[in-house]
Length: 458
Image 1 (tube, rainbow, N blue to C red):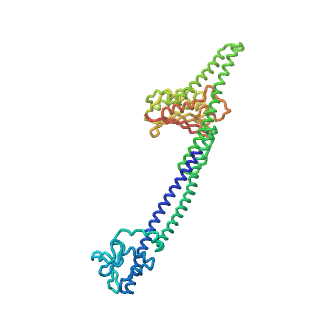
Image 2: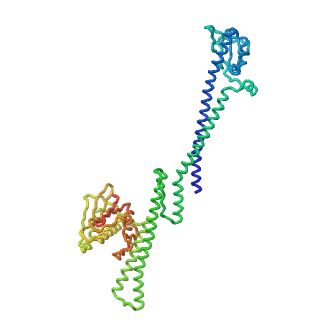
């Protein structure tokens, strides 16, 4: 749980960081843009007011004498005047700024770079705003600011900074709330998965979690549910297989022990019948051990195969010949259906004969009347061998587990054929898959069953 909480906090901090960075960037850009535009606005307004003031002064007095004293009487005009340089019509400096001092005379090139001041179409002087000297004037001292009063843009800048700060705090708070909500929502399924896996680790295998989305986490939840269901079924089948294996071993061993005790105590007299029963039970045990060995080799991927190229039709014909006598006794018709020109398959003929004989024997066991068809045909890049009967069929609930070891649709039913080990279909599947093939089953209860073996073309 600590790791999940850590993930929640990481996602929350990630959302918070993104929101905070976004808010700061927006705040800085907004502040800079607002300040630049406002400075431009003030600059244009300052220039206009100063030009109007000096022009009005000259119109009133027809001279520049006393202009600076008049401007200094008003704080705004005194401040605007610091960034301006004023020349009379002859180029004499009236208001000094930058490198210019009163009494200096500017040349014509300098005057051409300034803005002329006119009254009644008469040029009365020239004024420049930072065009002659590009260096910014030094910031006013604290004493000077107290004397001149606060600048308008300073108050505006403070209000803009405060508004942007409040907006950034609000945006960060919203990002934190949304980030926390999303982080908890995203990790909710992970927390449920953690609880479920801990329960499985404790032995409670039947765990399911809610699938809350169609994204990767939803896929993970679905995969977990599928894994849990499969693991639970596998555990159930393993327990059932163990019980069935114990039963299959106990029955012949009990019979052998009974006869052995009877012969030892003289209760039974040796006879051919007793020896036949003992031999049959030992044979059954031997077959069971052999089948288990085949399955263990298949599980380990060590099942040996002596492959060679074989005509699929020849495999089918061989199987029919092996089952012909039993089919005649049961009055069951065997049908052979093969396509012409089938490609060869690379198989171990003995192992594949074991597979087909097992399937045909099962079909004969569960078919009371009708027919059994053995079919060989091509399907894309595979050859299909099909054993189809008209027997009792398989219950749909049992079809998914038909290849499980010792599986019985009816757990109370005893095997009709005591020679069977209950591992036949499991061995069939193991051998087919060892050939890189696949086996499927199709069945309708009361109508019949089809086993389809698909083998790659050689």
